[in-house]
Amino acid sequence: MIYGAVDPHDNSSDGENERAIEPRPPVIQDRRTARTPLDDSDTLQEGAQTGLWSRCRDIIRENVVDPLVFSRHPPRFDAVGVCVGFVIGFGVPMGGHILSLGFLRLIFRFNFILAFAFSSVVNPFDIVPLYYGYYWLGSLVLGRPVSMKFEVFRRLMNPVLETASFWEVHSALIQLGCEIFMRWALAAAILAAITGALGYLVTFRIQKKRCMRKAQMLGIQYERYVEELEARADENKP
Image 1: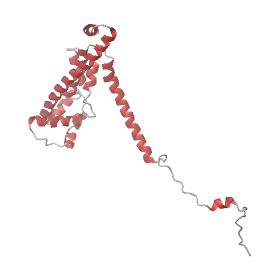
Image 2: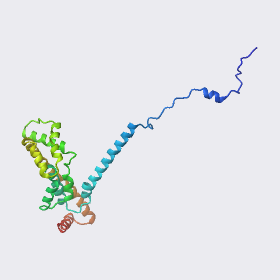
Image 3: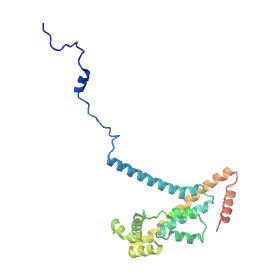
Image 4: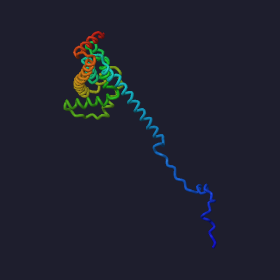
């Protein structure tokens, strides 16, 4: 009997040649590790947003949280500061905040740092949507229709944003028209009164609890501790 040319028991075949002719599996790149220019752009954008939020958080902590937590003033002193800050921020056109705070500081005693921080609730970043809310609220209170669209209002606010001093801002608001200015003034008075009152009540309650805990730690009565803070504030009064 004649056998085939290939012996099945012959182990002398070249293994490397056999591996060479085997099909190689396709290389699949992991999407999690793949990088594209678009991914790099998204990463940079996320990093910029994170950095902006971090800076804003640091500003809030340094100018709002720390002055309240580490305050050496009586509760009323800090509460009046927050109240004045809200009243000036919502009730006075942007550009006149520091001037108004300085004038009131000559008459009343309050935490100027807190007042300045809370007056910044109106700033160049939110003034257009906020003042449009003024226009909407004033129209609602006066019973008049909200006929102006936001885009039109934003264009009308450009002269206000380009001014620097209080009188220029005030003049630019008047030039928007009597109807708009009346609605703005009415809404500003309402928001200033409401936020000022709420700011005073909430801050006074928070700072009173803080002073009560501090007096308990020192082993003295709350009234005596507040009297000491009042006396210290009188000594530091300019």
